[in-house]
Length: 467
Ligand code: MLC
Ligand code: AMP
Image 1 (cartoon, rainbow, N blue to C red):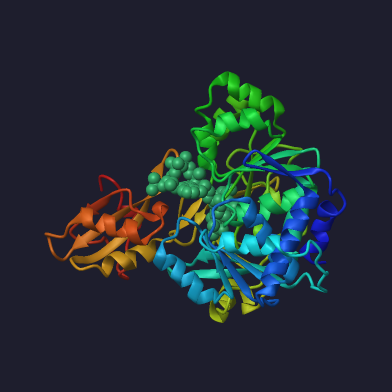
Image 2: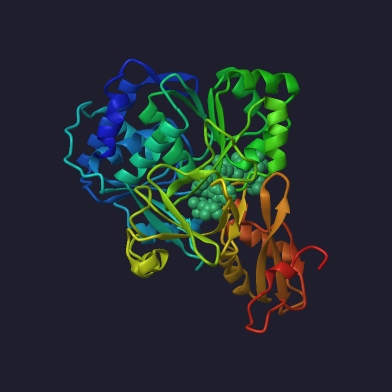
């Protein structure tokens, strides 16, 4: 089945139920269905054909959902771009994905105007589940971002697993504050909403200053967040936390490690044990703590149904299942390297180091690469290191993750100067202009030389404050 057929369960079978709350307005499933039919007709009238890419650079909003569903219905490949990305990061994705349409805030009014003149009906395409639905860009260890090809089947199996295992039903009230350009919100949030037929309130973003008021106002039963959001929510006054906890059915955390202490403090305050799960862009969700059963602090639980897991002698976790992506867009070599045996469908090597307890719970112990995860956003040090080293006055640079209570980790730059007069403030300003805000080093530390081992590899563990 393709995703349109899957979504029909909600879009067609419960047309008059409220589906979405967006900016104080309610939309029914029927309205969501017809809005996206109009957008699909507009895109088709512009000549877009199955398999072509549509890049979107938009913050969370109703029209982003319309465009995604229109792409699903036409067999177009949806390519969301992180809205924190700056020009050089965006240009790379546009060159790589070669979209037939690129939609930003500037193009949106024109598209929606055209859509308003279109029919609300749209014929059904005989699209197979193996058709690509999205390219989601994920940074690679090489420093350049690669498009993970996610199929209709990948999205469907992920959402069916989660709605089943987390018991999400049409009785849920779901608050979505995560950015839709990542699989956490797109794969889990949007798809669980449409598969379960629950009511979703969408926020433009998570604002920690207003989050509590929103939780009290909407009274969700379901919330998905990254650990930074839960750390922020620990500041909630106790009465409000109790009130929110009373209505809530399930808090889920993922995308970065949830410190056990945060889980304990949160439980104390809200009366709920956060359910931690583990996923990746290339695979969406892999393992999850049980909904019914012990949610073990520090562990990511068990493989989800249909997913097989194994750990090799180096501790690397590999997996296989209907959730695993169809390779990297136009990167045969990177795709071959990602799978054991070099074949899509073989064991996918996650790059995460894990162990399994005697009673079957899995725990992650870090990554093979020096990936930094800050607030749930990934930073591959090499991208910034190469950029810094190319600047006049800089001999070499290393980016290291430093622990941070709120964001989990933050990047710090260690630079070796060629020119002692090199202006670090100007360097920081340049980084700000060229990179997404979460990648900007929190500090620049000047050192005489980078510590290297006998093979010349930088020993990042020796680079931390005070060393
Ligand atoms: C963050 N910022 C945003 C933003 N999110 N700006 C615009 N829109 C957004 N959606 C910027 C802010 O401008 C600010 O920049 C900085 O990030 C921190 O903002 P803050 O207000 O202090 O937020 P904070 O309370 O720290 O919370 C940050 C956050 C954000 C949790 C809201 O980090 C976030 O949305 N993270 C989610 C990432 C995510 O969805 N990851 C999933 C990847 S998929 P400045 O310049 O002031 O620093 C994956 C697979 C899986 O990993 O398993 O799920
Ligand atoms: P991304 O490339 O953005 O999809 O990020 C995927 C990576 O996030 C995984 O490979 C893990 O390293 C990390 N991750 C996701 N969920 C968890 C979790 N619950 N605990 C620890 N790390 C996680």
